[in-house]
Figure (cartoon, rainbow, N blue to C red):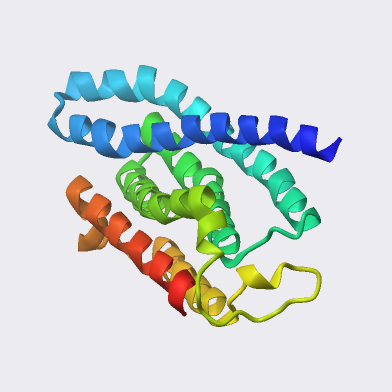
Length: 219
């Protein structure tokens, strides 16, 4: 029964995830560039007609990706298949989900409404969105390849009730600290050069993915 439900849930998780991350990449790789070059009339048309509709699918896809992911986490724990890769990927996905609902969407509403602090709100939303784009690379890597990552040759610590072959506590601690440091910049920091442009955030995301992969394999 659980196996059948997990297959359905996995399908929905991937479906909602494709919608969420696809729109995230649209906003960052296509939409942001267009808004910089668009005429005032074109920008207004996007903000009033396209953006609200796209953000509706974006935020609800994020929510349902998160909810279906929770069931998958429970199922992996039930099957003793939990690993450091899944833990770090889940942490990034959770922060991305919270960024959508607590930072991006509230501030985008101000941008769409044209409030007095719309420019400041837009900057906050852009920072959270770029951070989500940065997180998305290693997050997707861990979600897809976590079964292989757990086969690293490093020393693993056994945790009661969890498959010991998938756990390295130093990797978990270091990875978690790095993720939280990046997220702290969303709340307390500013847009950094390593994710300011599309090219920069893609390169940084790929580098971050390699660092996390090496961390989980060898640390």
